[in-house]
Length: 338
Image (cartoon, rainbow, N blue to C red; front, side, top):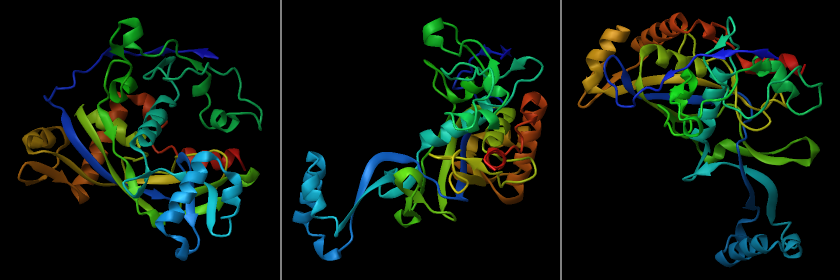
């Protein structure tokens, strides 16, 4: 265990606009393997269309609510139950925005410190590890992927409500802390219900998982970010200075346990900001947006220029994150479980 000093500064007011950008990053999340984000509920499927009458559906629902296993057993030839559903919202299968935010935040938090200092308080209640757990124990893969970060003692986490101190590490300033709203807010990333299929996992677990090759679309809203902070956000997504297609990241349940679970990558599609920020966009990133009405958009070659400039600025301002730039925890996992 090593003691690390955390760099903190007064939190950023959320209404600043001078030399800052607010807007939306539109992206797609490509499933490179099965992905499952559990809804905690079993899906009930009728396997015979002739039973899809309202009275039969009500009977099934009542039996489930009452835990009437005998009644359900009589329906086993016509009903498939016991598969834990993926999150579904508005009829779409999705990876929730909260899961996306957790992915982005954790990648920045788990970046190792540099020179005895860190830009993140590692917002967790888990104590630092002295050594990685042996294979088979809880968290052993996570520890090996993110070593030595998980062994760093970064002291108390940012908690303005408890401490009264509104000085925050850069990650809490971006994603929020108790009493301080974040400046980054991902939407749900969604695809059609047909993107899911049942999977039988080891140890009797059964899930509905998003199929490899599926494309989920969503966006990430941001507010009052400097160009270097936008660069950090892109690095958190796995985007590099050389491409708008990100490296492989891990997401969802079982992402550490199985090679064919949890692999995904972000692909940037466009950046949209209010038209009033066009001059700021031109001055801080040297790109030429396309303006239509009240919005300004950059995509294609201009988006690639923006990505390169913002990430290079981030790596210059925050050299600690050079080790995260282009790092794929998915590839590291495969080495660990080989």
